[in-house]
Length: 202
Image (tube, rainbow, N blue to C red; front, top):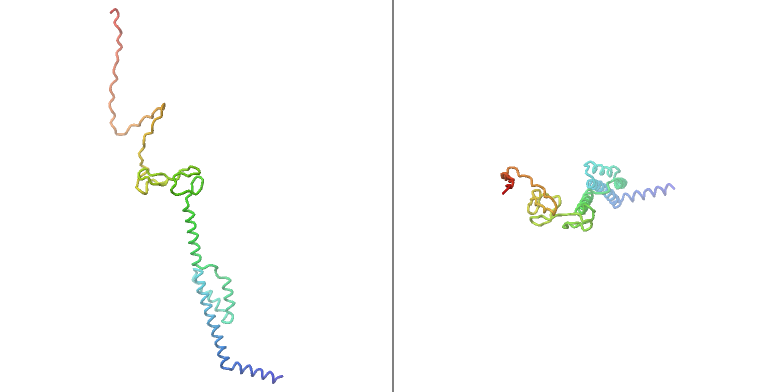
């Protein structure tokens, strides 16, 4: 039995002592070493793309390097579990998409009275008859109700000339206020009327 064990040990030693076998073993060890370093570099770059913290990429690389080349697979598994789900580029694109969607929703004009969708060139809401825009009296272009002047021609709406309203029949016209600084025309003296009595007796 001891001879059989000795022969088996000699065969194993001769097998591993072979130059070809040693070359294969060295190649496997070198391959594991390269994959180990590559996995650490991948974890460093991947964490760098997923966080703005400058220290976390080094922590991720150390998590791969500490288990040695023979157990680094466990470090890769742990890193895949705890790493952030989204990259910074993906977060940035998602924020841009949300902002674009929000801007599109805000760009849709709705009626302030009935909250229905209206066209930006409408003057009156066809559902609730609320006024949406007005026409500039100078250039006849649509302007907003809250505009103080026309953006197209520069017409100032705050200095609009007041027009006298026609007085309805039977209504008493309000007196016109005097203009300060204007000359007041002199009033003529009232004519004195003398009541003469008719002469008696012809």
